Length: 428
Ligand code: CMC
Image 1: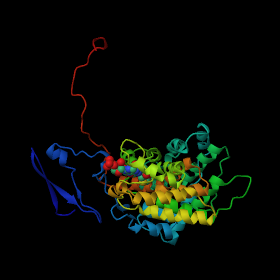
Image 2: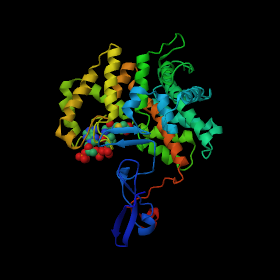
Image 3: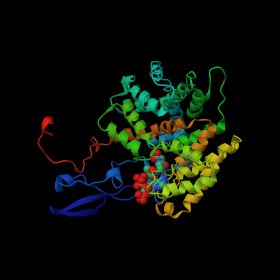
Image 4: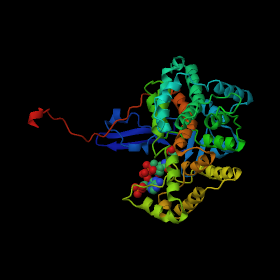
């Protein structure tokens, strides 16, 4: 805490509140006593000026386009680290040494299988169900299977639930994909990496051996690293809010998946590729730019803009580079990448986007890579969910071990009817 304070004057008098200082970033006015002392609430729909918690996991400087996990810049992690290492870092606060990493890998690998009974849940869905709908259901269903890791007051049980979630998400995601195309589920294979295993469970078939392509494996690792955490975004806040009541950890993550699905959040990667395909040709870009700027048209450039970044999203830079690399390595071309690059170029030179500080975000280029690898667009947000599970469980653990944590319970500015008497239906 600083010795700086903020004074607030209302008809009830003067009220003074402390300014809290983070390790980096803006100071925060501690208004916890505001209502008790002044009888006033604050109004902040969308939490644009509200810190909902304190956290030591991820830091974003939106003006400078900086993203740090436990202090480490995202581009360094994406270039040099592995997804398992980043998962350990987010959960435990520091990079693992070689033994710790080996043990963590071993533990996660040993939790990748799911209860055989879970397979029957998939069969209850229509084959054309969106895989995010399936994920909401089956991840929530995990809460009915693993009763030995649900005492959230026990750090060891929390850790086991976290390991289970990180380990089982790729298995469930691959099962959702296999179910949609009518192929048999593929069991996990313990000698593969987290990502290699997921690729095999997704694209392998029992009739043939599956060779993991190291270029694709590395690209997927990067995509997972880039999506691993992003401080108090909508889905993470959902997980925290659900968890704040003491709810079952698997159910909390299912709530996060539901939130992530929306096109303003994780669903934007699917929407962005669909949009780029719809544009189809660089000649049509001006038409779409005009629509994005038209106040009477609900159309937005998907994969553009961010609540926190008012500069280039550092994840989008790595993503664009990875898209070029993957296409080159696979010997593929994709006209959609040309459309994306030209759209970015035109938008970044347009006064509307300059003034509103709208830049490409993580979802703008990811679809090009995922498409080249062979994922259908409906799977894009599922891949985001696999990666973000690491952030969700890290944030959920941090919240539960925070002594200042309380059940999340926002207040409101009530604008409805004032008290009135009930009228019998015949008299209305
Ligand atoms: N295209 C056109 N105009 C936009 C866009 C866009 N993509 N994004 C924001 N604007 C305009 C918006 O119309 C508003 O204009 P005005 O001030 O004249 O009303 C202004 O910019 C501010 O927008 P906002 O909606 O008030 O900002 P927000 O912080 O509430 O929304 C956002 C952030 C990400 C939801 C929004 O930029 C958006 O809808 N982007 C497209 C969807 C997308 O790519 N989402 C992925 C976000 S990153 C990954 C993730 O979180 O999962």
